[in-house]
Length: 334
Ligand code: TYM
Image (cartoon, rainbow, N blue to C red; front, side, top):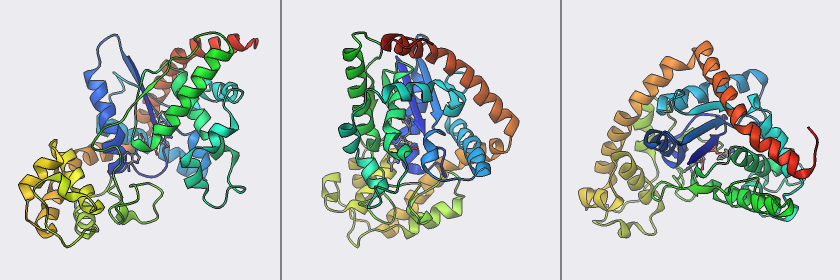
């Protein structure tokens, strides 16, 4: 079993990242047997599709590394690194550009969402972004890729690229990866709009809970979260057509480690005046220790850099045989 996943080091880690992906990373790491390996990385090469100054980008990578460690990623057991330190990602991306088809990339909904009406004005990097993501996964022969729902299409593309490459060059160079998407928390929604996902790029900070928010900020965001005037139903199916209520109940269930049905049973007939303070308390008590670990780590530049350098060395060594096999299959002398 080879587990691999990545996160863009742009902005803060938010509750959607945590419940959709990072919590699963930690769980898979903790349940790993000795024959398996986990690779987690900061997708700083992907982050060039978002404009950022030099200092900000350097800071973001270290801060996101600190956030992952604070959430429970253990650099002794998992390989934690930043993509830019492992040039094999960019190299394999270029090779795969010969395999990926324009028609496939044209179907990517994330590109369409991010480009919006400005398709001609966005960078080529944004367009080929999913090919670099395919390289990230295929380089390590990853079998399991824990992600949120929004990355599912990129992983389907990764599989298509791997199949076409293996077929075209008549060699099993790449393993086909499976996405691991949590059922209940695959898509955590914005606190301001139950039809939009919680996202780093939402201009309103009130739309998300950042793992760096202090206790008061968390409580205030929950208090102000959009809801409806109805009381909570006794079963989760009564939340149909109430996206904001469904989202908050889902967050409560995920944080408490129970089901939406159980949460509804507990709060049946009560309004949000009763539910929101309970949700705020639960979030504060769960996120407080993560924030404390994060604050203790985030300014220790030397320690963070040492983790990332060591991780990159291990990642480069693990990537090398696959990269070599890809060059060789294509008849490229290296
Ligand atoms: P990114 O940085 O946008 O998000 C990191 C992870 O968090 C998940 N996620 C969510 N899950 C549930 N609800 C939400 N509201 C929510 N928002 C984000 C994402 O699904 C993701 O798992 N392209 C990727 C990074 C990447 C990658 C890879 C991932 C680069 N190469 C290779 C896996 C394998 C991205 O931008 O994720």
